[in-house]
Image 1: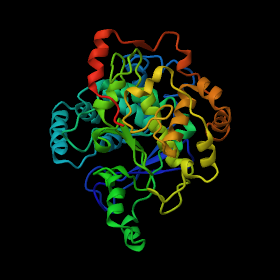
Image 2 (image 1 turned 120 degrees about the vertical axis):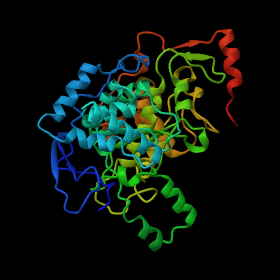
Image 3 (image 1 turned 30 degrees about the vertical axis):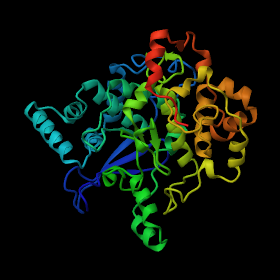
Image 4 (image 1 turned 90 degrees about the vertical axis):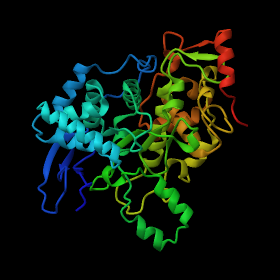
Length: 418
């Protein structure tokens, strides 16, 4: 067997999962299997239906370090070897510079008689970052990593805070089904038998990271993965490839929605961390990708599968729905689209669905008023009765007008391309 196939999971049900470590290095066919129980319960990163997390800055609203230690202890208790397996997965790379760094980090940790948490701390250059990444993985099955492209910018602590808060806006039952990957093992045969054009083959292959084999588990599942990247033509804030549950954030563009920032000529400055709507929007794309996935079909990837946005019945509801207008044109500041219709929507039905899902979570009162039929459909069919309190209920203002100097600086930063 290949040494990069590191983890397997059993799925006795969607809430209690088992995780099997085959071995961290040089996996052999005779490797012994070790079972880990009780993972991925969504017990600590609970659903936030109110507006509390939305009204925060990048430096507030996240779980304190004491709580992270409690989460880690809960899952590692009676699970010897779990930390070793998890850290091996969360630091898995193929780039030689990453491998060199990890070699030095591991050597340092051995000299200090430290365990695998030391390796994760070295990887993130910070203990709290390591604890947060590990806790999020154990509880929500989310893998947050550096890009395999070694020279790209890396996530910092405030990014992890934002990801934590964004994930908590997604109901646990949705988190359960967006961590299942579509199998890609038969991809070569599909290319041959279906006579897929070479250009399309390239698009499909580009939808997966360089270290695909290390990120897809042996039972073909895949944790929700969040990594920094460059995005499409280096302009988009973030992207989710069709059929995957990997979110790529272009850090520079992503951070333009952080509190205190101003961009382009919208005349507003954010007073809260407005990266959360970006995260929720991208998570909505993953929800779209995986809503109907049952984990059994052998060829279920890219454009060959049923999504919410391609379902023959739901498509009509999505097309007929009216999007709400975001207060004060919030989203005009950071979305690179050639056409913008009532928010982050570029005329494509998958973008409209992602926007509807985002508005249901973040500005529900406006959406319910503007599009009652779509709201009722989302409430009953998609969110299973869960409703939210959004930005409308923040006690303090979340944006303010730019002063003359800020406006003069912001305007040359770039108008929307037409």
